[in-house]
Length: 102
Image (cartoon, rainbow, N blue to C red):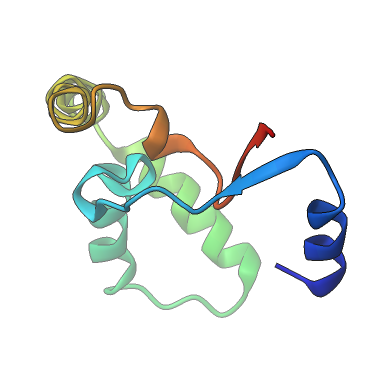
């Protein structure tokens, strides 16, 4: 957080809270699609950004519908785990800083 941002927040009626505990096994953006894509990307070579974009789009289209279905179905287990550990999943999706009125 920049000094200017900190000064603005300190002078406001907002109370700052630290980022909630982070659980890497619950990260919603990296649970199914990206590990598979990373494995594929490790075997590829692209000469420029356009080749990369074309390659990734082709990889995404090549995946069978069941690949995406499996990922969505795994969300049920992940959200259940989150609810059992934390009571709700909102903490997992918060930004780095949370605010509430003082």
